[in-house]
Picture 1 (cartoon, rainbow, N blue to C red):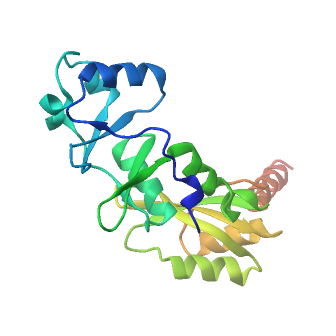
Picture 2 (cartoon, one colour):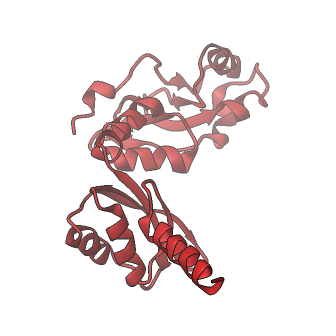
Length: 219
């Protein structure tokens, strides 16, 4: 996927000889969480956060507070999914881009990268969402795929959405008209069903049999 169209250069990094007041003013005009800074040789030094900048004395130079700079960035060759991960890890909405020779090229905005995720088949294609759980040492994506495909389904995407107490929670997007059969098969393979966004006839069937048994016992 070509990400060059998402590279933005509206804001150039401030120099470390600029004043903190320049940064503070910039933050009042923008909605970015961080602003990139560089030295007099145009070498990228990192980003200063809005939270930190508003705590600094406005008459100081940026280099006096450069110790607070966060050195995160991505390369112009970085995959969009790794870029999204970098945003999450650094809790920011602006991501500086450096070339392989460490030249500053611009930055990505978080919303642009999220929009790429929303355009993937996982979100864009029609299908059912199924959330399952199993022990970390017991599940496998090959088994999950085999279960889905053996019931005439196709996986549009799968990711681990939670890990807690050695239990992995996996979210699946499936194209299938037989979600109930897939859910039953997962149960036979000892997966716990958290939710399935389609009628779960297995549960409905249990309820019907339970109601029938109660009627029979009450005759």
